[in-house]
Length: 268
Image (cartoon, rainbow, N blue to C red; front, top):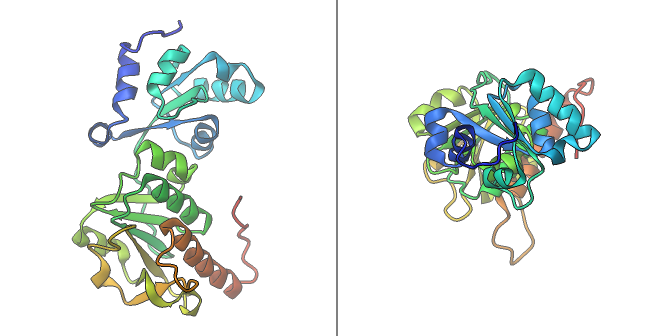
């Protein structure tokens, strides 16, 4: 039966998950759009509920996605366009939205990890997650004061990275330290040594600070400071762009050291 009321209990529940405190309490978050819901299912995620409109079922790709949702999800609810608009955080909803559990994947014992300290822009944070996934990073830790990793704008910008990275959030320094292990800690900052001069073959943890104040809690942990040299007169670089440059240099070094590595390059 088509749900046309925003007062429906499942609709109200999903709408409430747009708020951070509700996500924290329920340990669930919202994913919307065909591509993101498809990626969630490919990664093995199990939605607890999903909503769709006639627009989704009206084309082959959408019909396939709907069939996959109905096979994996206990509550798949058809809704009106008005209800979907109330659920969505986008201007033009694609006609599908799923509620997923927040799950902690095992933290990687080796390999590169990324630390976000004070990064507050949701679009930047989501792009950093997507970049980290593409660059072969397996773990990402966010300090308290960083934007919520499960905020809708972060999830959209991350383009599926949430289903592949091991994420930890709202950490203080004491909780972060065990996650760093024996990794060498590098801090990204404009005055650091050129990113290509760092030996990234040893396991590293790269700290990426906030847009305005830089790393507020973790700067003292850094054993190396790494920068992206820029043209004269340029004060700073977008945090996500800087992360991409540094992380892919680290990946380049790792692949160059293992010429028989079977890793494939990232999808663009």
